[in-house]
Amino acid sequence: MTIIMVVLSLSVLAPLYFAVVTSLKTPQELGGSGFGLPAAPQWQNYRTAWDLVDFPLTVMNSLIITAGAVILTLLTNSMVAYAIARNLDRKLFKGLYFYFISALFVPFPIIMLPVVKQTALLGMDNRWGLIFLYTVYGLSFNIFLYVGYIKSLPRDLEEAALIDGASTWTTFWKVIFPLLGPMNATVGILTALWAWNDFMLPLVVLSDPDQRTLPLAQFVFQGQFSTDYPAAFASYLMALAPLVIVYVFAQRWIISGVMRGSGK
Image (cartoon, helix red, strand yellow):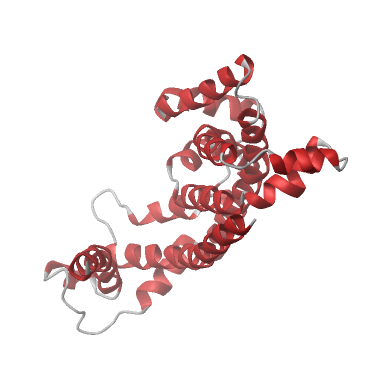
């Protein structure tokens, strides 16, 4: 097991090491060994990447879109999944469940052109429209996750709340939603990774250059005849740092959520 863990760790650490050393090299040094250390660390590559990407602006745009998508996804997708999970014995809700799941098999390029036209007509070719699209497009997969988890929760908790006079709305927010902690963390992490790293949807939806996200801004390093790899890898590492921090804290929350769920 130790050998397997070492091999798996190397599969992650080797590309990370390659990215770090590349970000500290000069363009001339890239012709040598890819894993060789730079003769003199070129820290100005990070400054170049900061300026070219307009890092404060693009990071703020990505943060707004990612945070908005995560919050709206957790609030809406969990409610839809709860309504479906507790009524799967009815034909209408079972049909809705399979209708949402079927959306998993629809490739995005098929609906890309209609989405671009609709967002432009409705004035949603901006950050807020992008937040809405991430929430809608993640609905099918998130419902698949939520429904399976909610079905494992005992109905006795809801019946007890109903006897105490709680409405369906109160039961969901006061009883069910707190128990969804582990699944909320999972859905939140997946949504954050998708919204933060996505390139295609912002490319075809956003019309204002001042609202471009970090992946869009990083495309500036791709020239017609050459690519500034040191500055590009420096920008990739700077973009990676916030998400790593979020994942570390979210991972702890998943573990604590599992323990709270098992205790209850």
